[in-house]
Length: 336
Ligand code: NDP
Image (tube, rainbow, N blue to C red; front, side, top):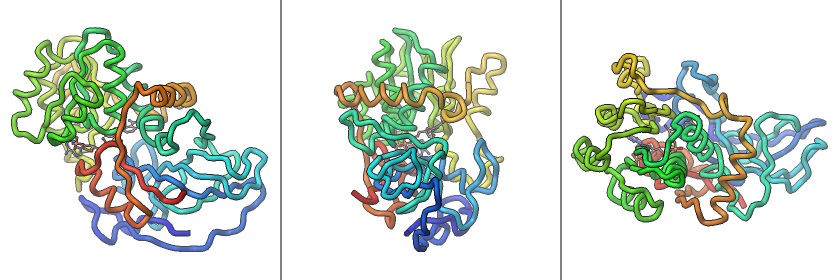
């Protein structure tokens, strides 16, 4: 069994020997256990803070342990009545080719066939998609006619936020890095506008794209985008703080300016609400997954993905994603 493990805690950007591949045999199953073969691995920004030795809403990854992550896997052996050989599930089994899970492990879900590619259950019909959908509808609460801005617009979270807000009758403006991503967001995903924050004219471009100000800002990135957005927020606006990926590689997280510093400076009118999908809306998992999969199957929800081939390419793909090299959901294809 080949796995990518945490060899050293990264200081800033991930260095060559921070994450390494280890190999060990798969042990025999005990009663009640299930052996999964990983087919697809999801790469998500949150994995970077978990490599640090600081406790967030989840524990840090231990040195020597596989990098955490959700994957799609097929049951290849089962000593649990809950799973049969051939079942396909999503589980948090980490960056490895095989994993053994207890048959009653939490956060393991059988994929029901809705005519959607399996890997979509790691992207727009998976955790990121549910994050966008639940964060927007429960915290952003957009009303028809309002202006919704979402950063990292071409990624799986942003993709779902923007298309859902469009369906709710909003004016939707994306923020993304580079002309190619911005064109895609408008022409393929159907946003009203998309601002390229790398084009050097962020504040003016954002203002021009939001002539009536901003009512909902779905925060994915932090940094200069957040500062530009803060100047345009309308009274009564809402800011679901989903993440701030621009700071995830920071060497000293305590010194990083977060969205809370930016919006906190607005005093009593500060609009932010930090949320975590898994702690707030895990009970909506089945319902929202089915909804998003149905949207994909019926052609209403569009998305793109970037696929790295094999576990050997996972680390480079992950490093690239933190710099915006991915175009849409970043996946690793591990096996068929
Ligand atoms: P994406 O696939 O969108 O990948 C991250 C994107 O962030 C990059 O493609 C890049 O897009 C953008 N980015 C990277 N660096 C910067 C930077 N310095 N400034 C601005 N943008 C940058 O990721 P996801 O859709 O999976 O996740 C989006 C956000 O949602 C993340 O912050 C993530 O942590 C958060 N999240 C939160 C959850 C929760 O429960 N709260 C659950 C899941 C995700 P571009 O090239 O356009 O800049």
